[in-house]
Image (cartoon, rainbow, N blue to C red):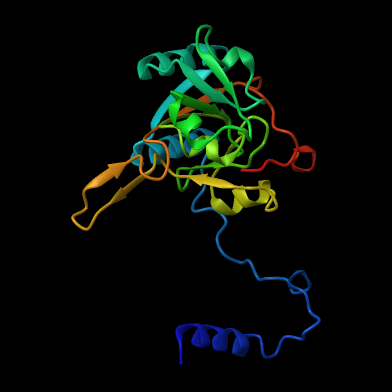
Length: 230
């Protein structure tokens, strides 16, 4: 018996008592697992997010909303980036004068994206317990490809409204029909001798800016967001 036959046989046995006409949404799933591991204040949740991001070797920066343009300008200057891919929803004032803004477009090829210095995006939600950023292709996040090819990604997270404690809380905010990208630190892998190499499957450098203040940009409700293709 092949592996495929073994797997399919187990699936059939598991579904033996399920009526053929039954749909998945008709059978509620028991979700009695822990939704959050412990109780935290908002400040503690944000601190946990920052600590886990740093554990993943992301660079974490804190600023007020009015300091965001200056913070991004400093990160781009430190990187030496003269061009930036920016989705349509990224405010013009986020980017410094003198840096070429490359609009997110389906016409951009991998070679085009590889040639830019950095990409700047917002995010949909950030998970403190796992140090994970989630992008859902909203106007301030753009197509998935723009955060996978360039070597440097600056991701702006609004604090505290975009930060949650746990993955279950994050899932409640996300639309499963949208293209979701889950990012836990810069891209990295290790060979059999555990030599870490960064920038293999995505950006080599991830800068996360935690912005305090309500005016850093507001996401649209899931139903109002236009679809985005890779």
